[in-house]
Length: 281
Image (tube, rainbow, N blue to C red; front, side, top):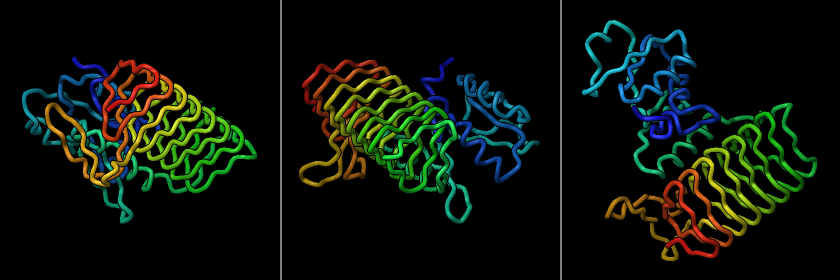
């Protein structure tokens, strides 16, 4: 049996909800669903659906990606566990697969554009009077934004996250209990949660796994000098991301020392330690 960290449906959070919860919510809002089908090796997903949607029936199957015959009498939903449901301006739903890391950034952008359309700031959040919030945003309970910051939407700031003095956060999804330090720029980036970003960091077009720590003066560069698309190494192959702007993928539970520069399209595996002053190339 695989745990939540091994399954994008559980480990990837969308507007503070696990991916599978977000997907079922979006589809249930448009059509009647009675039964959810989940691969048997992902029992954690079954448990999560049953906790959040007690009225739905959850069936597990194995050995086939097709809908079992016994489920055909009900309104059945079988959604890939690495898929994301988004809503277009027309109100229609679209399902996109998350295959590569940069697909998470594309999905994040779609969700921010389609679901964060107004300014929703919790009464339990603390926003300094000298800071500026521009555009739509969702700012959850316990968020603290210090002096002279700019939050440029669409942005999601998860519960108990903190943005330090003079920092700029734009077009991001920031997970809960994340700290962004003094005078940072974080743009078009997905932070999974419980991240610690120290002072004077520039984090662009990147994916930061849960529980990762970045020391001061860390930069994730996002553009090649030849202006070509960034490529990303998967196995022995360099895959064209189709993006001219793509930063780093930093795995969960990693520690990045002060002054580290990460070149475009590089991956730092989970539980890595990168010593101060290194160039990840």
